[in-house]
Image: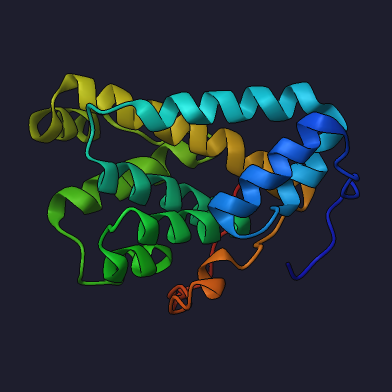
Length: 198
């Protein structure tokens, strides 16, 4: 992590804390900084984790499309933790790592299919301070994916906005999951990122 969180990392204690630390180290190799920050309000931490667990079980939309959409939100909002973690997760799920690496510069990259570009544009349009989703975007995605998948994709993007914006507000930055796996650094856009709301 390169910065300091806006709320200091709490000491994770007790039986529940021991279980969380053990699980995190087993599945991630380390205890994420975010858990220490959210430990100040354990109900929020556990409820967010529970919702995240339910989101992972949805299966009407392709996992790669959902992963890329979440990463597009993280890139747009500037959540280095979410971008790093989802890149790491894409590796663990055997998704297309060439494409995952290019998410921050997807508009400039030539590796994405037309459908993937539509999904990434939709994720960004939902992420704007005032969403810019159009009837045409939804109609095109409905034709390509079906209604259930579009609803799932929409909910995944909304959840990504929920988590990425919370992490950015709390100053939670990358824990270096991808680097620990030896993954190539994420591509950087050649055009500067526009700060939302400015």
